[in-house]
Length: 297
Image (tube, rainbow, N blue to C red; front, top):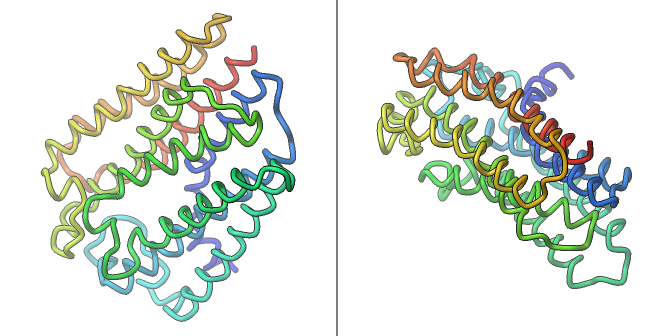
């Protein structure tokens, strides 16, 4: 059990739940919060994240990207704690559980009377499963072509925030673009930080992430931009929904993000970036929580 908990990388869950929590707060601000939708959304997002972690362990393990030269924590297949066959079976089981959870969520949210939206969300669910797996698995794994950032923006940003919000409200609000971009960019920052940390080994292994393509200095500037823009996105949303000074609560956790961004800019050795991963993931969750909380106070 310990080896599977380790492989699931539960420490990554706060990041995957940031958008879900923010969407719940935004829906509550409209008087349309639902505990069942929230619980099923959390369960579904958690399963998607665990699926992604299993698939990432399998894909990089099979390709040999996870090796003794890798900076981050050793992975399950890399160390031999879990065999390729066992991990492949775990991926299939988690994918099935993810789809079941997504199906229950969509059917509860829409009932059986909105089949176009039901089918649309089920397609999103299948796309989420495919994206979680194809990041590193297979010959055309998009993570090896520098496309990971775009997929993170789509699924951690727009699907997580705007998609979850619609489940509560059944209404579209164009200003959701701003909080979706805010969480999406911060989530991209976590991926970029991970890729900067592993830039040397990824380059040798043929994993052409954005840092590998542009170099560490430009990657650090790109990272700083990813950390800076969410402040303006949050302000843009508040500009259209301003009702209380409490809406600026997010500034307090955002200070942690700025401190993190400055530390990354001043770090010369990419290997020293590893401790910043956890800090940024937690700061992103706190940003989402306090930004959402400010909308209902």
